[in-house]
Amino acid sequence: MSRALRLWPMLTATQRYEKLVSTRNRGHGVYVEAPILAYLIETANGRILYDVGCDYRKIATPELRARWFDAKRPLMDPPQMSDEQRIPRYLARLGLGIADVDLVFLGHLHWDHAGGLSDLPGCEVHVHRAELAAARSGADVAVFGDELAASDAWRLQDGEYSVAPGVRAITSPGHTAGHMSLFVELPSGSPVILCGDAADLQENLDEEIAPGLCWQDDEPLALASIRKLKQLARSERAELWPNHDFAAYRRWPRFPSARD
Image (cartoon, rainbow, N blue to C red; front, side):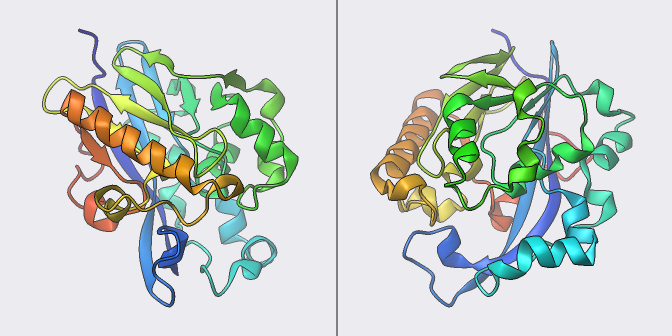
């Protein structure tokens, strides 16, 4: 059976926000500190990035930070991100460069998942066709339009497929129009399902709570995706990794250690 070789979680930034961002209609007035994560996956056919974090320039430059993030207060604060948390800096710690990334797989196009493409010029990018169409429509308020500038060159996908040996794309719409998760089989231990924002928190999975933001307010679709991922985890004896949960993140290998 083909398997991936290694999986590195990477903490690309942190952000404080009102919990109802992650749990629909739950958490008013409660603020959480959440990780913004990306994942590097090494396979027999090359290296994959699942999500790429934020555009560092929008955070580090005061004028840009004010332009892009001030309107989001008090629901959420601007992310906290250091230069060392940029994807190329993580790659360099492994002796790698941008040219060593064979594919960027974007689970969805919100700014905290796609903004880091600015640091990865020339990389092959995969995204669901419905995701890009929704982003281009301007109807998804969490997409920054300038981050779609190179989207004509992206490889659009229509469903589930094998991304690389041991890595399979799983459709999980609801949070966004074309959200995708990843199923990753590794040499030892259980497979890992990278939920992306289909499940921000362990609470979303345990209590089947939809994300706070659902595309076109389609809460049933978001819940169906959570249940789909849970069923896949049961049938494959896989671990579910929620995407913005510090308690979960702290259980995973700390970079440069990897899950293998």
